[in-house]
Image 1 (cartoon, rainbow, N blue to C red):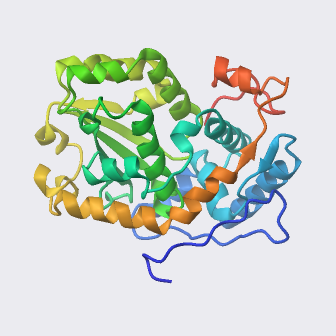
Image 2 (cartoon, one colour):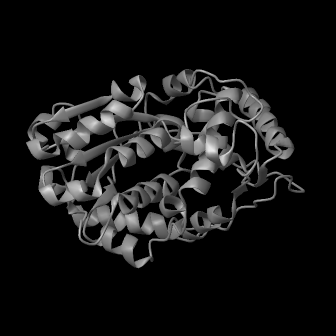
Length: 330
């Protein structure tokens, strides 16, 4: 199979006749052994936790359809360092978030006119090279979001798009990702599409339901008029993620933190922005069918248990989840 050939759709049956156990072990970075040690990953742990998570999905009274292949489930196990309880909690909240916010997660299609336009103007794109640990860098020029045409929902859809397009990448699962927000184009008009309630919803999802290791969030070129947006979001993020957020005056200052050669040529790197954007489109095309199939996953939130639609809308990060007690996230 060539790198650009579309991938087949995964099975969404809770209990398939045969489970898909195919997955890759990460290699490449010199630090990968240390990374796997941090994740507490070895073959016996992987096998044991895949069995536990699949049994949990099969017996879950409200999950109706869900991927059970190893590549998908390892997203949750690796992000929670192979803690079965917190991995299952994150998966449950991930499915709930997809149900509660269809405007963010449905139709993850790079051919969608709105997503295609945002990709074409360079609103968001992962960088082609990884850092020394294999970590993925994602650049978002947030001010390119036209407030006359788009809302924060469109921004969230673009972020969901890259998360799903790279979610099965074994190095992303293990080494994580860094998101860089370039705020230089943010204008007063953008205030009309941002509110504290929206920032709170986004933060709840980031805090509890994102199946990725968030290594850092950087903001660069932040104008004074955009500081309230940054500070508003920071106020809702949990302490662990908030401590990984840093503001930089410009790309020169950012270059003291990351390898500048990875950045687009327009910001002092090697490859022009257009090449990074092209690579992102190719990745989205390759995973297009898989991402669209996620719309068929289903969890029932219309019940009277503590984990219900209303309870999640009241506070997505509070209360008992499923049949498990409230846990500290790993």
